[in-house]
Length: 380
Image (cartoon, rainbow, N blue to C red; front, top):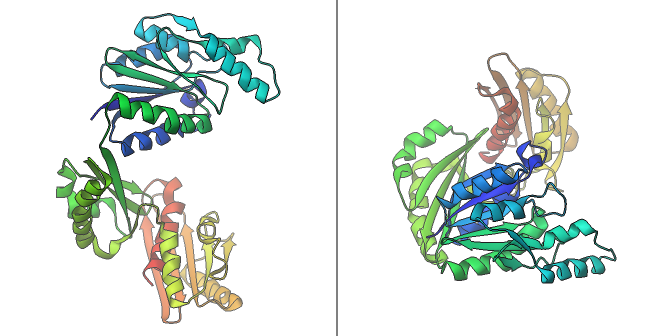
């Protein structure tokens, strides 16, 4: 399978002023067609540094995809940087200038002289028409490598990945295989516990198994390389079944399923409606449950920090006020070394009270506490 690296270009990305969603999208597209992604790099708008980064990537990967830096201004250096990296000059392409002019005409605008810079691309490169934007793109083939330069505007990049880049890569590298991932979600268990139970599976080569810890949730990613999706599924299935046997009820869902949706699904099966009370969570618990009209009856965000007894009393009153079958109360108590969360659930079957401690980064405590509350709901 061919290998790839992604280079996202822009000082605004490097300084954290803009969140880089392009690399994530490209990575998933490459994964789905069986291309191994070796590295993702972000670099500022400096021609020589970009060129050096491309040259370094060419020593490791077959495919280099860049995004950004194709605009008309002086600080859009990608065209010159790619040309410098492969040792050629840029050249003016009249057909690209015509495409740019036609695009502006459809917008009812007239291009300025600096837009003409966008019609200069590395000598000998393959132009890619951009029907959803004004910046032409290009492919440079050099020494068995392919450098594909795409715009930084996400909508344009995504369109060109689908309609231009993928067809080119399939033909150029004779792509047939895929890389497919299945993500299992767990709640109520820590990363070290999961690792202790499935650590032997994390040494496999294909499929591979890896862990990703969040605040109050651990994900297990199973990734398979295969010639087809059917074959990948067949490789993943027995491994998933083995993991589910080992972890049991700690696993609550997979892929796009969320802890909130699974918890609400369980209440729906019982025919129970829900109301919640929260403190110290910034309204996140209520926000995660909102949107289920008729099932979620509302949430109260307290400005005080109630103890266990007070939380029980407030949650009981709120349940009665809304006529809910189920009420959940979650209160986070901040501390200097650890933070405590008090939980209370009231259902037609009785009352349950819990308290747990969190010793991780304080900023993650609210998310952790929300997931603890949702996990209580899931297990009702």
